[in-house]
Image 1 (tube, each protein chain N blue to C red):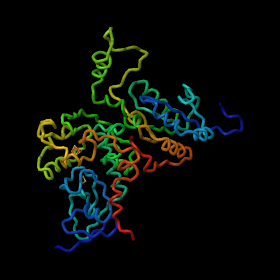
Image 2: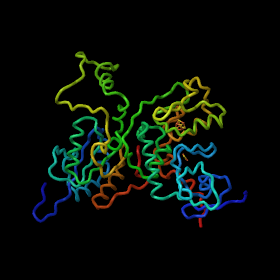
Image 3: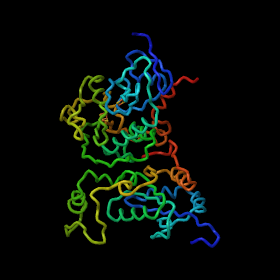
Image 4: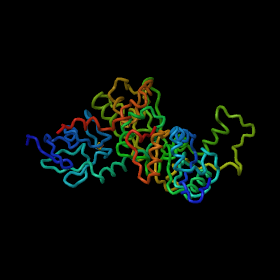
Length: 188
Length: 237
Ligand code: SF4
Ligand code: FES
């Protein structure tokens, strides 16, 4: 999808869901047919929306859903920071940890023991807590993205409304600092 | 000294009664000074410091500071707004605030204050303290994860209900709202009709069986920012 000679390259957007539930991505899709307007002015790079798994160039905007719960989340987030000009924390999990951060006041070992050993619905004949190189190591806590890398714009909400996402994106692409109106800044 | 005094709030002349607090005088004039621990009808407490203004150049809590003749008050300046943002962000980082499933969301004064001040996320790292929930009472529950230690329930129980059900124990990060020292709500003599049950600015003291009655979009702060009711009192020129 590279630009033909003479044609101006469209700015690229990358999106990802870290320790999130994809609800924020649902809300991106919820901008409905305006996504076509968006597609006229931007091109999606790495994103679940086009299923592209790797960056195909530098991005003007990176949108991150979810906070960091494991080391893979941290790696991906750092790559987003390196490859995107403007990095957006999308949704309560990215901005404050969200539901996954409910485990933050419980020691990690206790969480794992309840999930894999002692929980009332656990069936685990080997009695082992999964541990494999293929499984990213959990962090001690779930961290909001701005505690790991610098974030340029925060869009809280669970999920943020399509209105909030669309107005922020058009703001960024129009090179203005998007100020969310009162009705669009929500934590729920 | 008994006649009214005149003070200047952000350059606007406001008439006040001697002995009146800056915040009360501002309220009557339709000027909103952000506040969290203060609630009209309860004794001023001065704990949250969100209502900080400068009076004749010195920062002070406007909910506890009486007016003096000719006092020059700064309220809505960027410096004070920024300081209030920092306080509110610290309150978020200090407790376990999960707005996305809290039944007080949309009616919560802490959340509404963050919206009014334009806070998209707390800049401070979360402390994620271990706090407990007491749901032993059939009609009332207390979730200390959300408590901001404003002391409203303490004052309402003591001064309005005449009961002293709620009180502070501990210091610093260990400070918490206790029920009759170390009793459970069930054994506390607290009643669902008590004033103390209605004053909590956040979702820490709740009536059971009343959650999510009001749909999103119609809750107290969905459309109107906190303080809009006070600002509506301002006489139209
Ligand atoms: S329980 Fe509610 S009213 Fe009581 S101190 Fe905590 S926040 Fe204030
Ligand atoms: S409202 Fe004045 S200190 Fe809390």
